Image (tube, rainbow, N blue to C red; front, side):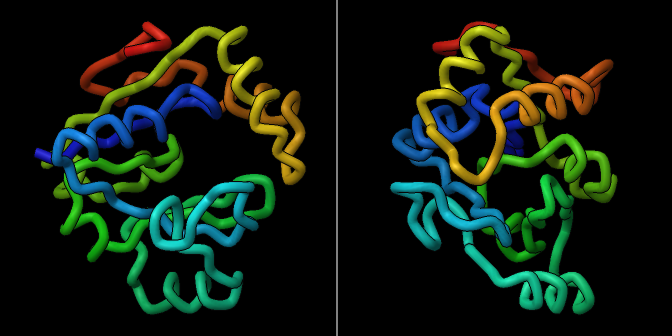
Length: 157
């Protein structure tokens, strides 16, 4: 059984993934074309790719799931999926995950309150994205979201 962590921005997906890794889980690493945030490490937080490299991988069928968000691509390769126990996916990525892969997973939806998310987004000081645009986009994207096996509303898990 593989675990997929899904949630709005700043819901705690990375934090929970790190806690699970500290217990022996193997984390899947997604690819992205967005620039790294301060303290993000290549091959640990993401594989940071050029847009052309990401598009080449898409055309070659290497991406199991992918999505575009705010002009940047995100996705996970099938190889990375197979070698991992726990991974983070977007709702859009989960929506296109092939059924035979979804059936092997438990999806955990981290659904923390808006004030907690806002505080965490402000602490990130992310120069690549607007906090309010992110909050509104996430709220719309997760409206009526039901494709999960477990929902966690407690912001410290």
